[in-house]
Amino acid sequence: MLGRGEDVNQLTPDGETGLFFACTFGHLAVVKLLLQHKEIEPNKMCLYGVFPLLAACFNGHAAIVHELLSCDRVNVNQDTAVFHITPFLAACGSGSLETVNVMLKKGRERRLDLMRVDWEGRNPIHKSIENGHDHITTRLLQLVDNAGEHDPLHAWPSQEGKCGRTPFISAIQNSQLKTTRILVLRVDDTENNSA
Image 1 (cartoon, helix red, strand yellow):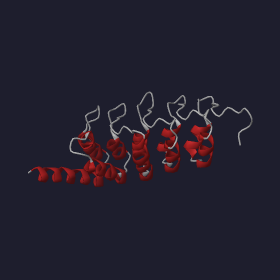
Image 2 (cartoon, helix red, strand yellow; image 1 turned 30 degrees about the horizontal axis):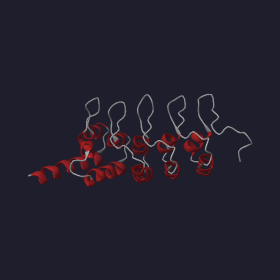
Image 3 (cartoon, one colour; image 1 turned 45 degrees about the vertical axis):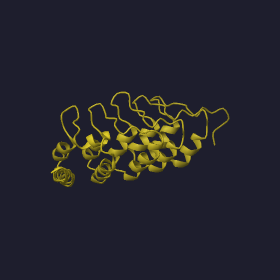
Image 4 (tube, helix red, strand yellow; image 1 turned 60 degrees about the vertical axis):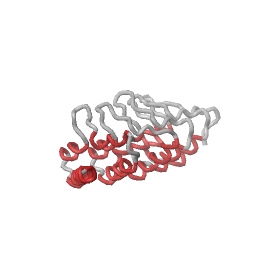
């Protein structure tokens, strides 16, 4: 229990809050306790540009992500000031499919912007491929396949980052045979369907 008059937003010298630490290390009960306080600043960014929701996504703490997204004050589209990494991009790079699914379900209720890219122009599929998470790449491609014909999500598989690499090239560069095979089969299916 917090002491009388205890500042729930007190900072370490690096600008980290108690909520940030609870989200980073997976302490769900502490996150729930802190979010009950109306004074809590759930989007507070530390000196390194990381904030509670991003920390939870980076570390694959799906239950904490769910709890944070249940709080109206949490900004689902906040990004790091320098590298423009959003919580969804972090989730896609984390390896936690459960975290990605929570972001998709709860985040969409909160107007999650799926089209955000990082400072190098990398989209969620780039992030999952670069971190070797075939299961997340497959989930994201299912999302693309289920999108409407004119939905901008259809650009994800062929979208180039600033260095000119598409997810396909990233998969080859990172020697990811399974992902390369998935993307090649998608191209074959697209060509067969348009013929």
